[in-house]
Length: 110
Length: 116
Image (tube, rainbow over all chains, first blue to last red; front, side, top):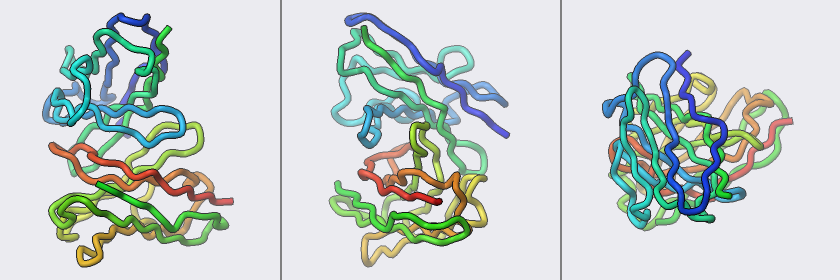
């Protein structure tokens, strides 16, 4: 069974830079998995941040960026702000058309 | 864009529910539509996707054979028929339109399904 793994938690100082990653148990993540990233604050529906590895959704600040780092997809937040404190999820498009979310990363800004 | 889910509620194990999602603000029949769920205190789980004309659907392993996604483009509505429900199907179910490059786009607020 394919598993998508993210760091369970991460901490960053205000103004700092943090990189969250998304790994695949069975393969290296590449652009062919069309990684996308989502932000969710408690009690709210998720919000789409990044699609197609590195394209920001409309209205997403440019301090959010996506990439492939080594064999993982990555979400980098540059100049973290207090309201970036959220859960972040990656989503991968798999062979056969199914899609799988990672387990999510809880980001603390302090 | 508005996506409004309905049909959630409490059902006993083995029962059935049908979720609906009314869409507006975009050209519905040109968008894939997804259902994504989130169990209490847990992460997101992708459930199912249907293409724009309803001819093709894909399911997560955890629901394949029990859940059926469908759509009525005349009503701008997507459905999720859930049968043989289990306790671990308890979750908030989100309706999501397809974004670019196989991503999820806009999200509804979700509807809670409780199996107990």
